[in-house]
Length: 304
Image 1: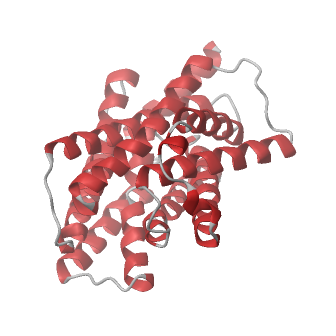
Image 2: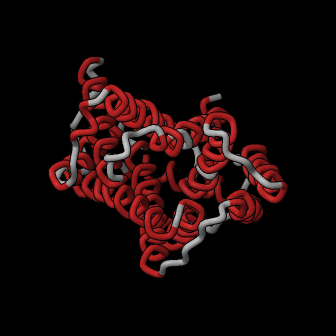
């Protein structure tokens, strides 16, 4: 039963991530995107750490220090890379390149490091989902193909793919809550210098405080806990493809809450994106790659 719920936990996490764009649009004008990203990790890390300490779930016995550092650095790098890419290339190009490249990079990393080749179903689903994303963002008029911005977006996609692959390995041996609490607390420490590089006066306003709590607790703390929980039963490549529900959620929130308009191509993109995700949810357990991955997990447990 837990395995069947895993894809839906990933989807719920992606939906919470999809609220970040709308929330940022409501932030004070003086809030710099990178400062918002650093604040998001700081609040999220602190929230997760407090929760894990209160319920007494923090168990650091046999904790993988090197792996934790790699995971925290991956997440810390993702924030400034993504926000910088979006500011340089625009929301459309930055989001599509960053989020669209992550599933491909994740699948290739699984293939290279775990010797698990992605299934045909995963390729079909990922292709449809990325195509849907491209069509979804086709309604954005401001497109600026900045080479450095594209590179940063690819770096963001790689960072997220690395975080997912590393985290999946960690949640096999430690509780999901402990993993995200430790990783995000450390990520917040890596990004803490940004809190002193930008004007942070906006956070003292009621509007700024509300944005910080929403991004930190809901869109980071709870979202990444659900994501880590889902990773215990599905592959990292599958999880990253399912995470493409993030731009879908962001687009729908933009329509219903911010009054944005989508053209017919974008609505068709939403349908194709939902179709791609639906295909993956329908048969994630039946693919050969998932079976190979579970065999690898069982072998590692026996060796451990």
